[in-house]
Amino acid sequence: MASIEMRNIVKQYGDGFPAVNDVSLDIADGEFMILVGPSGCGKSTLLRMIVGLEDITSGDMVIGGKRVNDLAPRDRNLSMVFQNYALYPHMTVFENIAFPLRLSKMPDDEVRRRVTEASDVLELKEHLDRKPANLSGGQRQRVAMGRAIVRQAEAFLFDEPLSNLDAKLRGQMRTEISRLQRRLGITTVYVTHDQTEAMTLGDRVCVLRKGKIQQVASPRELYEQPVNLFVAGFIGSPPMNFLPATPRGDRLETPFGDIALDQKRAAAVAGHELLLVGIRPEYFEDASLVDEAKRPVGSIFKARVDVTEWLGDSQFAYIPYEAPESIQQHLRELSRELDSEELRTQAIVSIDATSRIREGREAEFWLDSRKVHVFDPETGENLT
Ligand code: ATP
Image 1 (tube, rainbow, N blue to C red):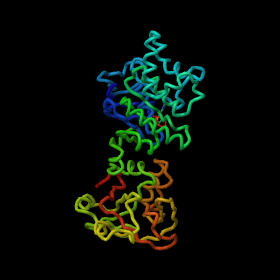
Image 2 (cartoon, rainbow, N blue to C red; image 1 turned 60 degrees about the horizontal axis):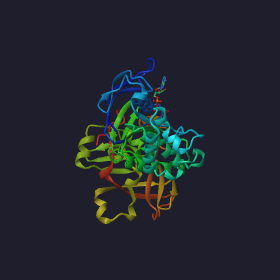
Image 3 (cartoon, protein in one colour; image 1 turned 180 degrees about the vertical axis):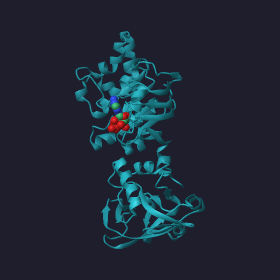
């Protein structure tokens, strides 16, 4: 196993702007790192440069302490797990796992020993004589990983391995990959555009935009402390609400009422005119259901509810609002870039399933003011 260090990595195709633009990232030995971002952000290119399938324009790629820029893929001892697992249909599970060892002309008894060991770890022992067609999706995934283990690869690399599967199977495979990675403790780099995969699988997540790193952090930190509008809008489903907000001393005026700011937030927004306040749907509660003790740390929003959606354990309420044209323009750009239709000028509120709020009526929501984020709409920076 090995650490992967990237130092100022650049990939330039032709003379447009770089597909990967000065990326420096350290992946620790045994770590599960996710590369995530919308289509075209450069995540596959970065992965292909780690494996050696793509030349590096400038910068250093260091694997296990060794600079590998000029090493051919086969000499990097990494294992790429493909979307379709690349299993040979006419070979048994045993032979599929043994394949890389056969290629290296390893003696028979050593091949047998290694395949048996891998199939033990992967719980494939009973299936060694089967063909891939007679395996479940999860078992096929394990065979693909078995190949990587027998080779004693330094790291696993995944490029959107679940994108062809239906939602249910995707969920199962996610759990499977996560369990295996933890059990094997092999350094893993996993590319996806799916924020759910990013949030549930990785130790850390690297969010990319137009070839540049936006933030590298644990899933929790990304969710709770996004550094900018892009990360805030990308992570979370339904997405964070962005409302126009004007600072007035220790308060922020918004279309639904004022938000009280603590000292830190008030200082951060001082001197600004029009801002965007970021509020996750679950920061709201139905005001009539909030404990008296909690009320003072929050703000009250009054709004007319357009549509509600009841989900059993919670419900969503949709609240349209007007935003100045300059703000609408920022939101349109962001939703285009994130390919998210939901970032329109309506707020989404997630509240308790027992709430009696009604469509078409005024409702009062309590908002936990300690959690709101305030963004500069021009730079996208999170000021809080
Ligand atoms: P997706 O999720 O759509 O695969 P991605 O984030 O993996 O996107 P890349 O495939 O890494 O993005 O592409 C990054 C940028 O580099 C894109 O603008 C893409 O058009 C460009 N690009 C990728 N491969 C080539 C190539 N062989 N020649 C020219 N441009 C390329």
